[in-house]
Length: 328
Ligand code: PEP
Image (cartoon, rainbow, N blue to C red; front, side, top):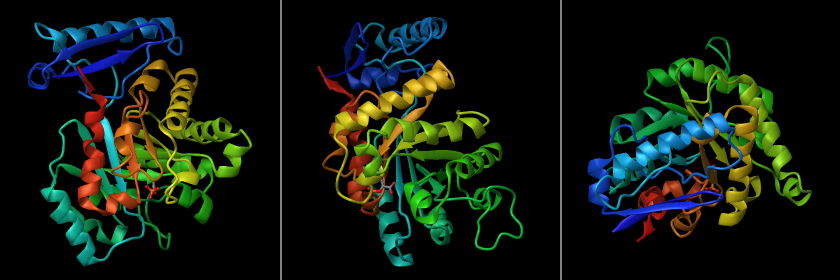
């Protein structure tokens, strides 16, 4: 038996249900089965809160009718896990990784995306199961043409990419991309129908100087100032000090920033966008720490670097969506 809890600053709703009953009863009106658990509190304005609460009640009815049902909060996105392969791999190692992913048992309740290096996207697209979508790690800011060394959004779509990562810390701090440029690149991708994984995150010295929220807000604002809509955006909070270092943020540290990001969206974009936009965590996520992180209310999934290069471990991170379920 499994149950899902909906937390509120003032109350908790929990209805238990056999998973099979939940799956069969979950109608299309329920946007996702194991979405991030959502707080319904003062961060939302009254009109929107009422609207979201009404939808939440409908969802509870949809899945809980006649059983002790697993419930989901209204308007939240499906759990999401992305694998960023960065500048790693060869034809042979990528072929092995694809085979591992094709053979992995993956939970249904998670969107999965991998981002191979450009030169292997075609190989991956033609050999990887359609269950997993493909992302690019970067894209040019506008239509293609005389831009030596760049890859255009149109070309990425042409070879089957559905996503692009923008704002990754390695592009910000190693390559030198600034927030406005990143915002513009994201806007162009979205207008052409490529979905965006929008990365934000503070450096260690910024965290130590108490500037974590300011840095994240500045980076968020540049996305907000440019993107035409948040419908196809997943925000990845990736503290720079945790990327590739083995120093994972604690679940509480990650949750604190995810809450702040959601509040920023609520105040500066809309309550609906705050509720519906997935906020995933990245930074030394592995098969051993993903379940504890996934239990956090505002963590809607992960962006994974190093551990995404090992098929079975990446699959187990994807399957940490089950940690969203609370044992009854
Ligand atoms: C990343 O590159 O986005 C990342 C989170 O890397 P790692 O998981 O290796 O820290």
